[in-house]
Length: 219
Image (cartoon, rainbow, N blue to C red; front, side):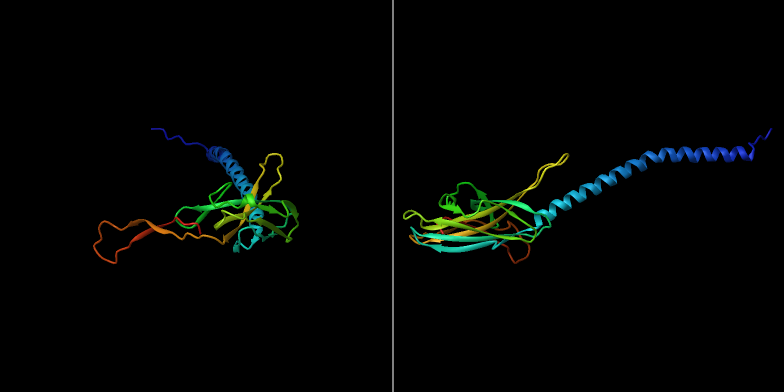
């Protein structure tokens, strides 16, 4: 039996070629990983810039309660601060809101059953805020002489539009300041239990009950 072996220099060259071939196969994966990492960093920077702009807006007060009489004019005051490091243009409007869900959420609406927006005018509807600048906005509410008793619910809604550029979408951010007006007159306070539920079977107590209330009044 003949025992043939390759020269040592031939073995070293083969190993070098194998290592080089392996490196060439790995290179595309490294490039793809680098591209994905760069895209992720750009996306994170974009999200951070957008978040900073949105988090930089601050309203005061978040909500307020007022009382009024039929036929009276009242003023509701809200202020907005630009806490970001950019100058922004703000648009202000009044919207009505209603209760939403089972946990005290609110939903803005153009015309709700307890609307106040049609009675309201704003002192400023568009303005520019420099970094850390505060703007006070006054809403004048003209209460009708009749048919207005009970609760009425409105909101200052501030919108800032982000600038758009090539390859990016225009962004907008809104923040709201709620106000609740209780108007003198016939009041109907009507609270009813809409649902009562409990587990069908429990081995041990205490027994948890869930109550769902419905406000069917006008305050």
